[in-house]
Every structure is written in structure tokens, then in C-alpha cells.
Image 1: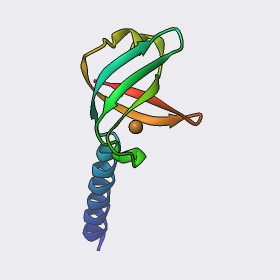
Image 2 (image 1 turned 60 degrees about the horizontal axis):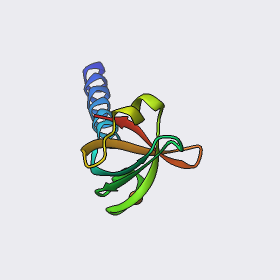
Image 3 (image 1 turned 45 degrees about the vertical axis):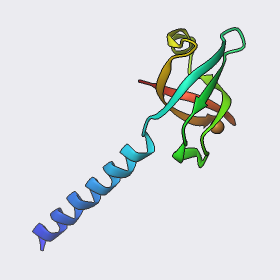
Length: 94
Ligand SMILES: [Cu+2]
């Protein structure tokens, strides 16, 4: 019986890990415009599954200035976006 419980526990852990990995899937996008002063970047992004958003061009904020400094216009990026204080923000950049 103990063995079954351990197996179930391992199985659910794997499922949770898989869901977690899906939630942080990177989305591809192309940087169209950067307004570092305003902390805004316009990205032509592919579908953002975690935000239930189709592919489009839109403005994001970045998690911090260091991330902003890594962006270049015309560059293809892979990123994770989420709502931070109600604002769509790039939280991770590959
Ligand atoms: Cu969008």
C-alpha cells in the first residue's frame, strides 16, 4: 500500500512539473519599437497561451531596466509575459 502511495505521489509531481513548464513556455516575438524612458517596448508577438491572447503587435513593460537594455529593435526574442499590477509585462527573456 505504501508503495502505491509513493507511486501516486511521484506521478502527481510529474504532472504538476509538466504544467509548470507549460506555464513558463517562451513565446517568440520581434521587437518593433523601444521607448526605454517610458519603460515600454512594442513587440510583434506570437500567440500568448498563458494570457489567452492571439498573435498581435502590442506594447509591453519590462520586468526591469536591465531587461530593457538587452532589447534591440528588429531582434527576434523569446519571452514570457504576464500581468504585473494589471500591466502586461515581459517577465522573462531568453
Ligand atoms: Cu498581445
